[in-house]
Image: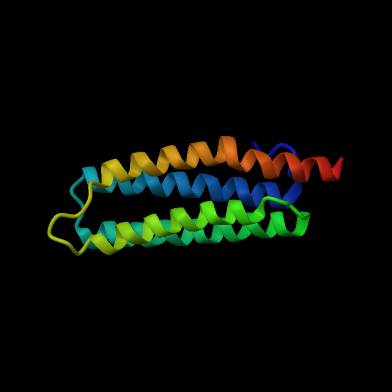
Length: 130
């Protein structure tokens, strides 16, 4: 979806997307393989770090490009980070949430976000460079 965001920025964002999906898959597989809460928590910490870094990159691109819907986009990012942090907090509870359900939610959220929400800023930034 980043065909119109050029050069190093596109490569960096694409690499971040791949890393996020790979880490999500790793979390899901670790859960199915019976990983400890500590191991799952470490993977989740890394997933949170990946998302924070990615969102910072995206938001900087939007800010530099004068994207008018930056604040709404930032709110979506903040919402997901809060969900990730909430999941991390619940790992210490006697009945932690299902990692499988969460990984499905996150995968669906990311696919929607990439296809629908990110498309707006990609189109906007691409039109400014043409």
